[in-house]
Image 1 (cartoon, rainbow, N blue to C red):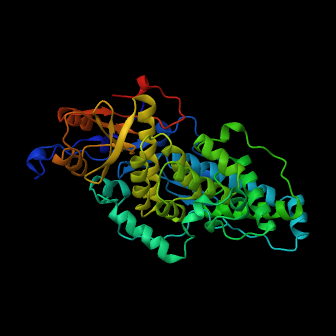
Image 2: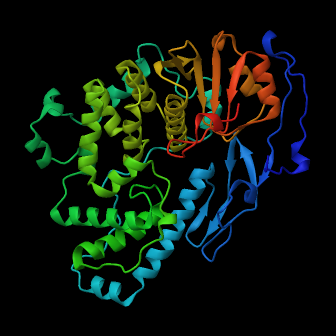
Image 3: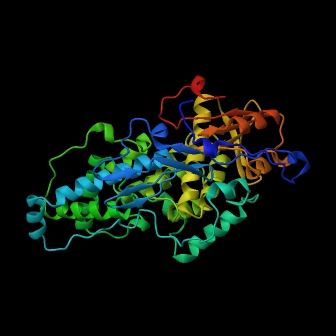
Length: 440
């Protein structure tokens, strides 16, 4: 393995923790520290615009990177989030250069309106911060992240909560004639003038050229995109640069193209139509549309992923599960978890049902295996982990754990000793990884 860990943190403390009978003598591992250069092959760690700290800690089973830049400091979790932030920082730098050009200044001075920064209500809506709340994966292992109840009681409470905030359309909303659909704009997009629609289109065009998400929660990026989009839509300003194609990565193929190519209200409508096609009830569709925890891009990614599951009950369960995410971290964890299920279908076979055990997502294969997806970067053996994975609730003759990152040698050994088949370093959909290349 190419990863080099700092020796001082590598030690494994074999502590006997008082515990349930099934786990009374389990070892305990500390979290390691990695060098960024070992995790980020081919990525520049220092440029004129940003600097990535050379050391990477594992916190709550995720790599925590540290970025300092001209446009703010960031602590992204995981390699993909780091890549996205670096791409956004570079994009802000390029937009800053463009906005200081003579052509841009002239265009702006000829406009009757000051440029504004707006996400048109369809990026992730502000949600109240939850202080003192443990990380999403910590609550997930503890069975407390979503606490899905049979019958979807808690999810339906959120559905009722969403419906009480504003008057919803009647039940014929999802069956409107096509011409009427085209005339209406999704609720979260708002009633926009032609000028605003021009701004939205221009913003998406610039986001496409820069390879970034037009609905990112990076406020500095939103400000930069909004300013240049306003100048473009009002005064016809056009940039004269193209970002190299090697920098345009990261969004799940089709979803990425759609958020660049189509206006927000059309994306919302297509999400609702697809969920209806999947057999999801109207009230759940409306609640998912209005869910503040996921951005429009993330909702589209999830909706497109759902088409890989054959049963309406599985898709309904996943929609209910999504509605109970309480933070951006929860949303990212859920997206990655669903992606692991899609990878399973791609590499291993059909999933016939999806539900939960002990609050953790559990899929069942046609061959009778119970599959538990874990979206973590580094799974090491701790009381939190073995309390969950060795609990009586998860006992089964045929069970597998699919981990997106690395499972430590100790954790892998203990899991196999207790009847788990372990697959780790599972690449996300679109990476081209084959079934044989996953690590057992």
